[in-house]
Length: 378
Image (cartoon, one colour):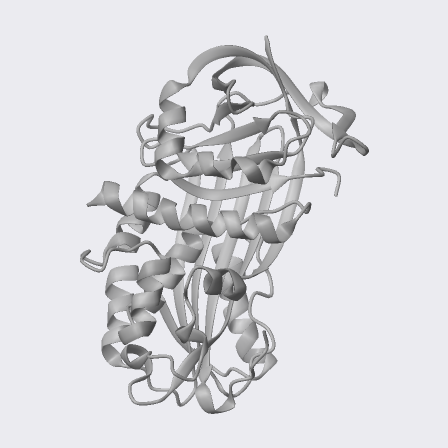
């Protein structure tokens, strides 16, 4: 069941990433598809009827599954952390004063998702600060002010937070970092700080599709649970968004199996990326529609009280430097009472042009963070 869980989560993540990149045009991007998957899976457990069916379809969850996909993913993430590689994930359920959720839903989140449950006062800065302080703590201070502009009609905030910090197995020497040209396009160049080293890395070329891929491992106590950063570099002049299909679960597993260790003259730009994503338009494209209407069925959360999803947001942070990678993300689902809902809608591997990056675990195929860098100087 675990392998099916990984594939399910990765199929959803691939669809989410593809839509996000297409909407982002030429901006640098960062997203954690797994964080969205876990958060939406928790929401699904409180949905019924058509609302639940739409969520399951978008999440690529088979209606006949045991419903433990997100639990399996969380368990895998926690097991892969060790003294050398930091990876944490936390879930939170923050409830409005005087809102009484269905007890079974709260108990399920506590027992199956180890969720922190707390009552706060939405509609005021003090209540929002309690939630945001919790998120900031879970992400080592990298994600701030996730929840804003709540009203007294906000009934809950459902949150997943993830944090990753890994040191390269083969770190770059800062003395070799140099400022060079990065080709944003045929017409535009910018200066960027490039890290450089000559070392052996797993590497694969796809000459038919005109791209190459290198895998940069992080330190780990166990090879079986180790993580790495993959860099997919298309031929210059290509659009990185056209290559996202190779991050789909089966394609990525196939490519990774064909990679061989090779001596690389590796150049990689340092970059720091922060993003804030409104996920509702993307999820609507994936078929989640009723959840955002007055016809939403969240009887498993709010009982007989009519509620609907008012916002789904993610903030993400990724920092790539000579030592390694630090990344964090937090995803929040906000729900409101329907009556007050507002309807707002050697081998050269020089990464000197736009590229796709992703942090993934080869043994499971999980992609925890991914994005596209169009301009590392931005």
